[in-house]
Amino acid sequence: MKNKLIKNLNKAMKPFLDENQRIILENTMNKIFKDFNIVKINKSLSLEESKNNYFLLDSFLSAKHVEGCSERTITYYKSTLVKMFDEVEKNIVYITTDDLRTYLSNYKNNTNTSKSTIDNIRRVLSSFFSWLEDEDYILKNPVRRIHKIKTKKVVKEVISDENFEILRDNCNNIRDLAMIELLASTGIRVGELVNLNIDDVLFNERECIVLGKGDSERIVYFDAKTKIHLQKYLDSRKDNNPALFVSLKKPHKRLGINGIERRIRELGNESNIKKVHPHKFRRTMATNAIDKGMPIEQVQKLLGHVQIDTTMQYAMVNQSNVKIAHRKFIG
Image (tube, rainbow, N blue to C red; front, top):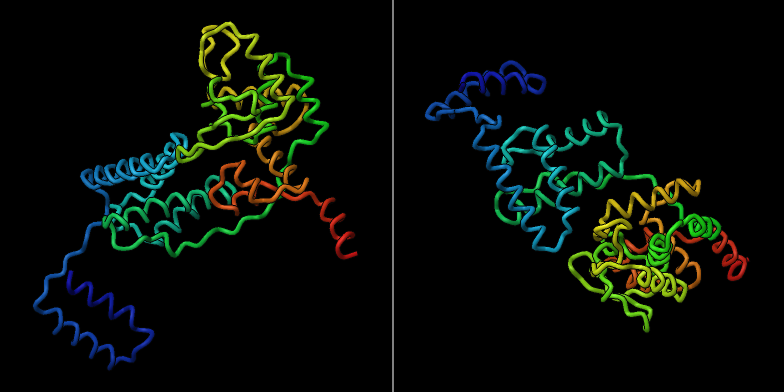
């Protein structure tokens, strides 16, 4: 092994040294390495090392759970990291920046996925390896030198007033009508909607208390129209479930995220409106609020964002308003 190492080093330096210099280098290395045993480290993943990788993954996910991450987020973290383990096949200690760059590149080429998805994976890897570094399991986070992936900024669509009226007209039951009115009026997340109980709604104040990300409570507000539809919906129910929104058929279970997303998507298809989903109501509320002059800090409070930059991503200012403002203040 020692002779092979010296030979490889000599070969690597050949383009930079003349013959005499290479002879001197080889002799020097033979003298230095004379009293040393050189053993090649086996970086292939053994069964024991594989178990250790998954032990650290479980510890990381537990830490994220304690921090208040949702089950959905934790599931995404787990699936993303397991895929990386399966491809890289190395002990975590030996995973390098090049390993992860190659993994991301191959993932993009093999799946033809978007840059934003690849950057999401990069962020998960960064979070995991940063935690490993903080907990002293590794010396240095290998993702630190993998920079944020530049993505094309796309102005995402909102639900127009006309399309919202069409959605209203196609609601064939009071529950669905109350649900889309509440989503549009409050801008709450679908995960917050499914956790709402009837007792969380204060009809006199036209507000409700939602449990957001990180188990942080906040108050959101709804309009008079939403109040009327919600009351009609609750008056029509005959069950004793404390949940605000339940299935139409017995035993009237609390609606889950998948159930609401599926029903909203079906409502969009029935109305011949493309890409209707719960998050689109949230984006629409934020955009309309800013277009009508609500300060961005107040929109941030309503949406429950920690960083105002996140709010700006949701709220795309209407171009026609920019034109009017330009004529008012500049033109």
